[in-house]
Image (cartoon, rainbow, N blue to C red; front, top):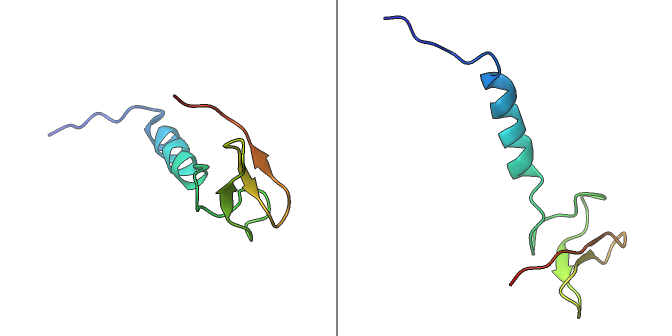
Length: 60
């Protein structure tokens, strides 16, 4: 049986892996310093108290 593999399949899988490793969520480690933990500030920004990294975004 001949199976077809898309020429970009390995690159797509690599991008998906990177995407899931770099998700910026409450409680995850900081993407900048890798030491601190992300927490919300009073304006619902995710911040790292260790290095000062700020990720602002909005949701409804």
